[in-house]
Each structure stands twice: as structure tokens, then as C-alpha cells.
Length: 314
Image 1 (cartoon, helix red, strand yellow):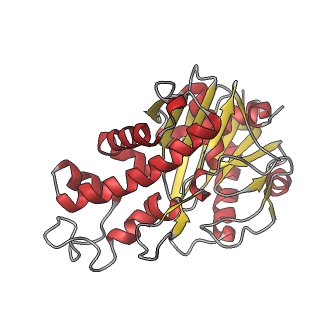
Image 2 (image 1 turned 30 degrees about the vertical axis):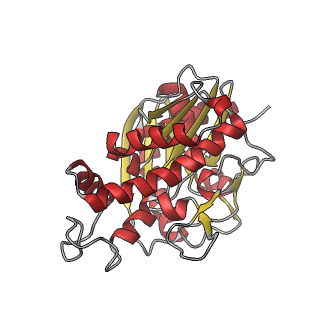
């Protein structure tokens, strides 16, 4: 029986799965290659693992989610904001030359959104927006079941919208949303000496401080943790309110590692988005957690390998 391969090329985590055209994952391989990872390291790992999969299974196609902007029609990577070596890389050509099967290259968040739309928390939505909070922050808008790709180079890049920078004392200072709210940015702040308030459970000297530690501290009522999570949620909610004002999705799903904070994060995001949203959007949308979480990109890859039209507009 012919199977398909789903691939996630992230800023931190790399995954490969074999599965069905319905998005069912039968087997997977996951690795975190570390902060010094290059495109070459990732490609070597992918080639080794996909060849092993192809030795065991008959593969009919590959769906790839890449963590960065790309030209969808040609499968050409523009760059990666996290990993060096991807500039102007012909990723579709690389996959098809190496493995000899049709390959579809899509932004990783967009592929995760396809997984959620078909199999997860987006099911039944006609105007669906998916975003993930991980090493970076992405986004994708799906209208009547189809991804809106703008001019062919992607659309919905939520993490690259601009928000007030509360870290900067200069009047009117601005920054990109993902430099405030991504997991990488949150943990960078939390591990900066002197950032956590004295007396907080996150004071330095207790090892690496993670986003999970921040959520745990907030649940325990730690004042600094509650304030920091508030700052993150307020900034993220500004981005969501802007998405609502421009595109009016009826459902917004949030995935990625930071979303695993659960209600400590989502209760704040819902509250602040409601506060910032335009009056025309009030009562016409919902904000939900990703149902697929770590499986979203892989499931989307399997679905898109079987039906490339899911990632095409028009």
C-alpha cells in the first residue's frame, strides 16, 4: 500500500512522519539539533531518515512544512529567520531529486493550519485563522477551506506584524510581535540576569527557565510570572485583534509549544483580544487551542502530499 511522508523543518525541532492520505500518522522521527544547527545539518538528517522510511514503505509523495517565508509555486525558500544556510534554497527541487516522488513545500505554520482545518479545531470553520507560538510565530488564513496565499509568497505572517515594544524606554518604540511573544524571545528574557523580579520563583541560579516554568509560576500566583504572562498575552492579543479587524475570521486556533501553557495563557488572550477587538467583530469569533499540537504540521504534510490543492489559492 502506498504511503506518504510529512516533514516539519523548524527553527528548533525537525520531524518526519509516514502516514496516510487522511492524515493518520503511522510512524514518526523527531530530533532537536541544537542552537548551532545549519541547513546542511537538517538536510543530512532528513535524507538519512527519509531514505530509511522509503526502505520500509512505498512512498507516493512528500508534504513539507518549512519554518520561514517561501515562494509556494516553486517551492523556493526565501530565507530562514532562525537557521543559517537557507537563503534562496530550491527545497522542492532538492526533495524531488533526492527521493523521486512529487513534493509540496509549504510554510510550516500554514501546513499546521491545514492539519487543524481538516482534522482539528478548525473543522467546520469557513473563515479560519491558525497561528503557532513556538521558536517563532507564524499564521495562515483559510477561506472556505483554502489557504489564502496573497501574491504567492505567503500571507498571514502574524509574527512579523509590528507592536509597541514595552521593553524599550524610547517613546513610540516598536518591534515585531514574535520578538516579544515567541517561546525563544520569552525564554531569552526570563534567563537574562536581573530581569525576573526579586523574590520571584524564576530568579536566576535555578537552572534554565522555560515557558513551562513561567506558566507554573503564574498558576501558583507568583506576581512577576503573572505580570510577564500578562505582557505577553496583551501583545499577542493586539496582533489577533488586528487580524480580526482586517480578515474577520470566525475561528482562531493557536498552537505551538507556548500554547501548551493552557488556560493560564488562553484566558488572558481571550480577555485582551475581546478588549482590543473592533466592535464589528464582537461576538463573531472564537479563540481555541490547537487540537493536534505537535501533530499539526505532520498531519498537514500528509494531507497536502495527497491533495496539493489544499495549499493553493484559486
